[in-house]
Amino acid sequence: MTEFPDDPSKILFADATSNLEEADYVILGVSYEGTACHRKGTAEAPYTVREESYNFETYRYRYEVDVENVKIYDMGTQVPRDYPQLVTELRRSLVEILNNDSFPIIIGGEHSISPIIVAELHKRFSERPGNDLKVVSIDAHLDFRDSFLGDRNSHACSTRRIGDIVGYSSTLCVGVRSFERKEMAEAKDLGLKWLDSFSVRESGIETCIREIERFIGDCPVYLTVDMDGIDPAFAPGVGTPEPFGLTHWDVLSIIEALSPSLVGLDIVEIYPPYDNGNTSALASKLIGDMIAVRERN
Ligand SMILES: [Mn+2]
Image (cartoon, protein in one colour):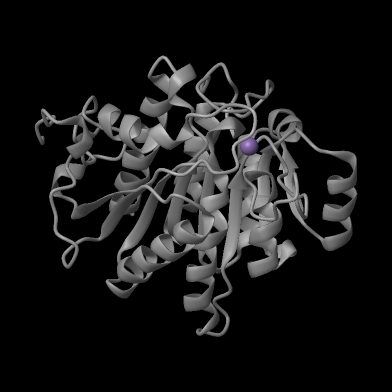
């Protein structure tokens, strides 16, 4: 296991000891919170999620995989000063990761980073007919306003912007439970799909996973995890906590089910100032487990 570094700004994800050329997985932090409205602080999350990664055994008992033997590279953290710089830098890094045939794992930052990542992936897959990219978004919020406070690139518009790219009916929101009336009507009209947290609880995660699998078919899938999709009891350190969410078990089951089809992952909207450490730890664990379950497959 890699040692925890003395200088916190140099913290890389534990066991990310590969170089870019050999890496099967590339981790990138994006310290961006340009449109966060309710609480500020999510820009610190790329550092706290990495800090927590040193707590876990490299051997993943559930999957019988030692992540120490997996080729993981940590690119460090981008700190863009505004949205245009975010787009330029994130796109550049994504091109580098995808040209290297590595699997991108992005630690936000706020949810507005996700459409930029999806756009790059979509570009790749739309060149291969029959391989249309699907997006699964775990989130408490529908994030489907066309613009919020005059900003179309607000984190409150992330699902809408993702749908603009891959198609609304190729986007599935899981765990949603916060809708503005007008955005819900527009989402219905445009064919966005969602499984709210109440139906996940009522029909059970196994039934929901079968629905998610039907939605995916044979297509590649990008997964974006807004940590507020998980109930605040399990993930309290988020910018906009919303009770009656998914459990951490639900999210692990979804990651396990999607893992063979996954082509990228982001985890966003963690709010370290209100966290006792456990939200960052959960995010870190989900990243390691996603790698381990893919390696087992
Ligand atoms: Mn959200």
